[in-house]
Structure formats: structure tokens, C-alpha cells
Image 1 (cartoon, rainbow, N blue to C red):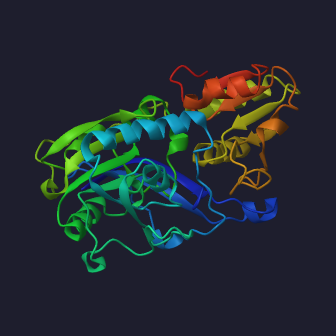
Image 2: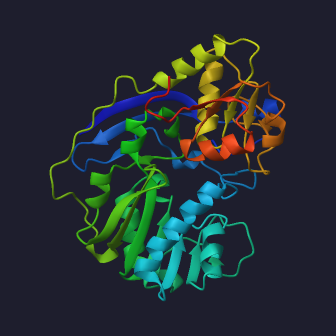
Length: 355
């Protein structure tokens, strides 16, 4: 049995794909989300998800490491990995563009990357799915921000356990409890088929060495024994009820912008959160003056769905003093204030107190 939790239509299929022109961006593929909870396993996922819709290429940009705050997060992750895996061999499954792998390599970790979609030339990355047929195994597996993209996460973990013949694993995913508490509806998007809570996460394994939250509570992590993977929960499933005011911040933003015509407005953050937020503002009849991002690969490009152009932080300084700036990730709020010399009116839209 599956119980529907949340439904939203016409979201960009690849919210981190950028486009060369506004018209192409507005024609980007769209798809629906129907979040449901499986009442047997307790897991939450998009019932309308179709992995065949996803096709990644060089125009896909989701690198966050330009931020000093995110660099600190990666150091925190390395600290956990060092506690359990220092001096051991590692495999990073789904290593993406290889940034974290190269960071660990620079710290003398023995690590191999696995990613069929890898586009670089690092000889330490294997461009193939992780199966036993590769003949690769390590003491531990690193799985960062991959499991939320996989249609059947338990079977995927079982495949990893089989390919690696056991060992330990570090997993990191977004935290759905945090999304609900902070009314971060803009963190629900098509690329993420799964949405994990801490309780769900711990029920995946019999042997858990450590688990907790990172990045201001936005991410969950777990260090576990791969051989102890469970196919079904052993404890009662915690039924989820969605907050009645889950999408309230979009109404708050519309009100603030409409109440200050000519004052100027911007969304700061042109990754997943900002893409969804700007699109829904546009659909509510409001278009911000700028969408800003620190990543040079996004600047001058256009966002899917809305067709809005991405500005650099330097361009944002042309906004008038006191302009309304909607910061998509409160982890970066102080960093953004420093970069803009505190000239604007800042709103952390993922704050429970945002109004």
C-alpha cells in the first residue's frame, strides 16, 4: 500500500542543466512529482519518476565547491571518513565529476571512483556501473548524494554489497525531516526520486557505526556494515503527515516583492533550490530582477523552466541598496552578506521563521 503525500506538476526534469538561451531553457523537459509513502517499508519516493527521462551531459552543472561554507562541509565529511576508513582502500560509487575523490586523493587516501557518466580523464575513475564483474573491491564504499537518485535504493545497495563482497559504507543524502521542518518545498525535485528520514535511514542496516546530520541539518549520513543490509524494516513504520503550510514561503516572497515595487529583488543560488523557487515565483506572477550564483559555469546561462539568466555576484552589486535578496540556502547567508557588504535586505527562505 502506498499513501500519497504531495503532488506537484511540471517541474524541470534536470533542474541543474543550464541553457545557452532563454527560449531553449523555457522549452526544457518537464515532469510531475507524486510523493508517496510505502506503508510497508516506510520509504518515501516519487511514484511518477521515470529514469528514462534523465540524460546528463556537459551542460549539467551542480558543483557547490566554489563556496567556502561548502568546502567546510566537505572537510566535515572527510573527518568522518578518516575516523573509520583512514589507511583503508575506498571506492566512491557515483563520484560525479570527481571533485571529492580528488580531494581525498590529495589527502593520501587510496580511492577509486565509479561513475558511468564521468566525463573527465582521471585514470582513477572507472566509467562503468559497479558490479562484481569489474573485479574491484575495497575496504569501504563512499556513496555521497547518489541514493536519492536511485529508483530502488535497497536493491541498489544490495548490488553494491554484492559487487564489493561486503565491507563498510558511508552514505550521505538530503534529510527529508529537515525539508519538512523548514518548509523547504523547493528541495523536492524530479531528479530526487527518494526522500529519506533519519529513522528510515537507520533501518536499512543491522550494524550502524555512526549516523547523524551534516550541513546545518540538511544532510543525513550513516556509516554501516554493508553485509548487514536489511530488505525490510524490523520496527514499526513511522507514518508521515505533510505540514499544512508546506509551501507557505512562496506566498511570503510574492507579498514582499509586490509590496516594494522598484526596490529590486534577487534569488541567490541558481542550483536546484533556486531553479524551483524562481519558477514558482514566475508562475505566481512575479519575476525577480536577478538570479545569482557563485559558480562561473552557471553565469550567463539560463535556467530550465523559467528561462531566467544567471548573474554573477559582481552583477548583483548593481541592485539598489535595500533590494530584497532571497537566499536559497541559509548555510550561505553570512557568506553572501559579506560578499555584498550587507547592502541588501536578506531573507533565508529555508528558515522556519521566514515571513
